[in-house]
Length: 252
Image (cartoon, rainbow, N blue to C red; front, side, top):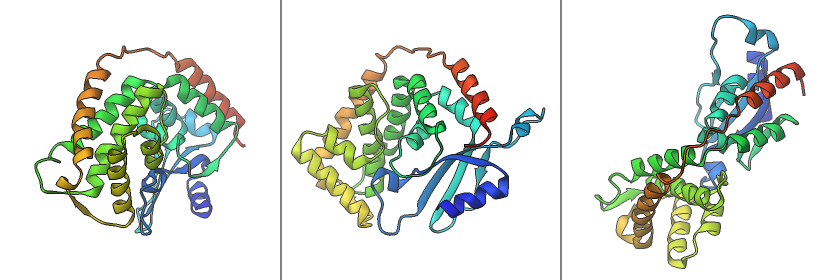
């Protein structure tokens, strides 16, 4: 992976500040044949940012059978950080890291904590869970992946509510930490095992505790998120200073 990232950096004349796994492998849901979803944050030389024309701020490599590789420019990254963007926060909380420049990584993680908005993240994950749960109880069989695409954001919501911070992205760890009822935990672990062994479908009737949990937790989170006040974190100047400082450093 280091070689692949070096090729990208050379091709586009950028410095990669951070790179991580961001898909099923980061979530602890990979099978033996899962591809690699690699995401990275990069910066151009200083002069690139001083032109009057707006330029493309993403790098996307052609997706292959085994690798999905893409990244965001530093300015784009910090604009999204100001919004407490959950996909970006997931990158920064991945346990599988390929490149980690210091002090960039330490400082950007601290800024992410400053900018963190529980309400923004809860709305993101609640909507993701609701979207995937839309027809889940109208069918006899459901894709295992669809069930997990309901449960993963739901448990992220539960962790945010409990800890008031951005949670781990590793789904089995979330289950172990948050789910106390043994029957429910057993069904969730069963789904994880099915995903890891490439079983595509499961009968809805086989997951009574999961089904009940989904219905109850969706209602609970929807009620809860509306009680959270909107807070203006006002981190723009901190982000501006960090942006300038990072560009001036140039190399790490």
